[in-house]
Amino acid sequence: MTLSCVNKDFTKLKATIGHEFKNPDFLKQAMVHRSYINEHPEFTLGHNERLEFLGDAVLEIIVTEHLYHAFPDTPEGDLTDWRASLVNAKMLAQIAHELALEENLYLSRGEEKDSNSKARHYILANAMEALIGALYLDGGIEIAKTFVHRFVLSHFDHILKNRLYLDPKSRFQEKAQEITGITPHYKVISESGPDHNKIFEVGLYLEEDLIAIGRGSSKQEAQVEAASQGLSNKGWH
Image (cartoon, rainbow, N blue to C red; front, top):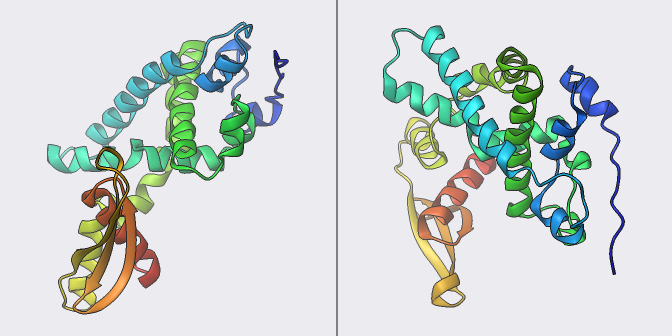
């Protein structure tokens, strides 16, 4: 059975962004996930992956240029960490939520139901990059800069103040040593699943106290998740 294509109303999104697209198809395509095309082969536009590819580069150069000029005495290593904290998938997905991008996405029926998954997190981050690519194509670098400064770089003061550019494991260790004088450690609690698709459950401990549990497809991923959860549990943001 062929499913009929849906027309989205982007009025609210355009008002939030503050840009009226000369070519509305740029915005529309930025919101199209590959899964939608699989269900709607007759859809006249392609999916958003090429715009995502472009937007990723545009975002990186805008953030890099800003940090380069704003912090002339900061070494390259710190600038790299700061940039990563602004352009990573977690941050972009958070901004996508703030912009209510989710309600504007073209998704397959299966993807629409899977709203709380890690996959949705990446879909939103990728849509953010595609949106930046669309803004660049429609309005040029200045329009893209305006958007990035308003919605991405506006988070930087908070990131810097709270040292969020450090990965969760480093942040938890720093806080734990500062507040308790204890160095945290991690232990694998369980492993499940076949060798090619294992899930690790890792505990984060301060001495013998279990602070948090993380899960992931590798021990490292599970440790990072546990540290992130530990920061939340302790209120150490």
